[in-house]
Amino acid sequence: MVIIEVSLLSGFVMSSRSRILLENRTIVKKIEVKANVVYIYLEKLNDESQTFILQLEQVIQVKNLKPASIKIYDYYQPGGLQISCYSCVGS
Image (cartoon, rainbow, N blue to C red; front, side, top):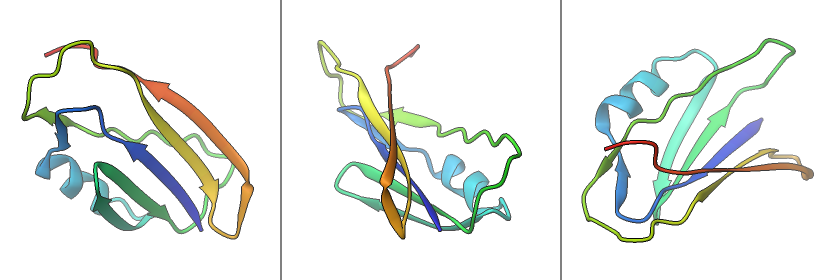
């Protein structure tokens, strides 16, 4: 099982439409949202490229918004952790 762990930008929440779109993908086993982090559980990954789009809604205006992290790792072997960051690209 592979986990994509997306820390949300300060003042943002994941849109309900985004959750529905993710849950309808056959590769997605489960989605959890806990304390400003979205956990996307995938059954498995293969050599095919996968794209996941999370639509976020701003609920609180925050100045000097800092980038947030995205972590991807195997649930059973978390040592192969991959980390990336993202920022707000528009309003």
